[in-house]
Picture 1 (tube, rainbow, N blue to C red):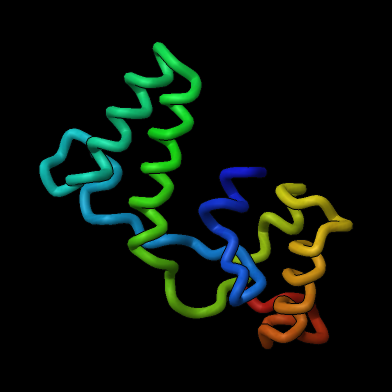
Picture 2: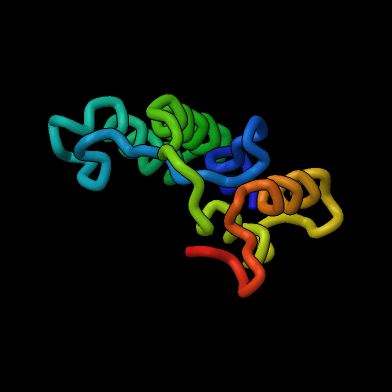
Length: 114
């Protein structure tokens, strides 16, 4: 829950959004991955030795991805965390997500447009 909230939640939009990963992010050994690879390596090394260091490395990893920005557009998948229990149903975040979903234009008489 915490990672989904920290990384994907867009408070300005009231929804969770996919983030754009930097080129090469799926291969931390790739030269193109740059800081992402270093962040992943730091997390792995830190997790083996020190929980606080691991948390700091994870925060750095999140910042690298978050700095790349969110995907553009409105997608039904932006509200998946609402249905899969990634947020407390009575929370402000859930209420904001429901409001933004209703205003998104995706809710139609037959269901949600995908």
